[in-house]
Length: 187
Image (cartoon, rainbow, N blue to C red):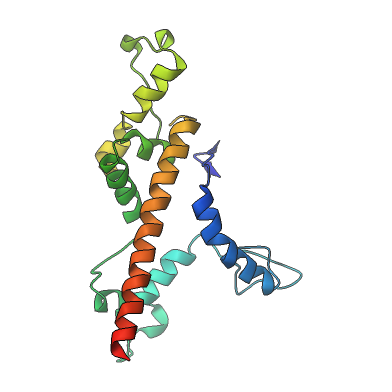
């Protein structure tokens, strides 16, 4: 992926791959190579959802879709389940909290592609690769710290992505279990 016209690489943990494979296979069963195919695609023009699709989906969940304007039956489904507001930007704040809680605050900066630099006065040239990795793991980029709480640090990114994947999928599985228990109790 690119961020600010620079290549940004994130390792995808096996648990994320295993979670996504059935979704990707289901999409391919419908003739698409994309995990999230666009409804506007066709066999000749197989395309993925647009960059704004998530935002548009959230607007619809909030009952604020322009097509619903003036309708009495518009409902804010997020609010009905206790979510007053949500935006994709909230994920940036969440990853910062998860990384900090797991003792690697610099992991958020690495995953979010925020530039992390050593001060010239600290003697970056004098550090070994291991010392530089240790420094990065414990240092947040200034923008991350200010807004949500680098470099190519692949080992740090791998650790951070594993921690983040586990946090997200553990929460997903807990929600699924709670929903199943609720449905069983309702029977």
